[in-house]
Image 1 (tube, rainbow, N blue to C red):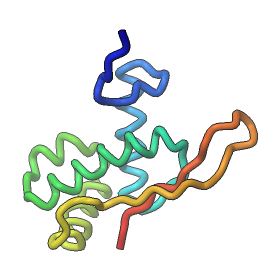
Image 2 (image 1 turned 135 degrees about the vertical axis):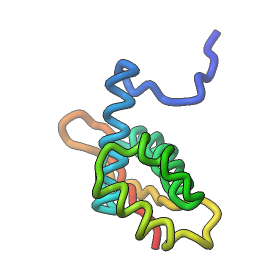
Image 3 (image 1 turned 180 degrees about the vertical axis):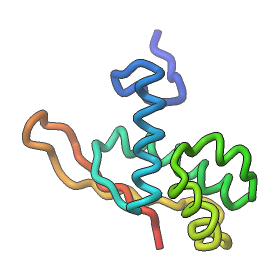
Length: 114
């Protein structure tokens, strides 16, 4: 019997998946747009929206524990929390960008909305 686990495993071990999503979240915060596979983008959305919500709630200790990079932390607290102060979620947008030639994976661009 197949049961839904609540998240995508992405073919990786737990530690690898957590590290990968953390690094991708930092990259998305810093660059505001990244290109990845569709499944990774859908999982990354959950991670990034949680970080922005922590920044909006002024929960600095939890945010500092979640974000390892100082510049990403600073940008979350100073820029993005003020930018999305009036918005109740939905901070990211995923655009499908076609098929990758090498392995036929569906590619997507994930952006922070304006």
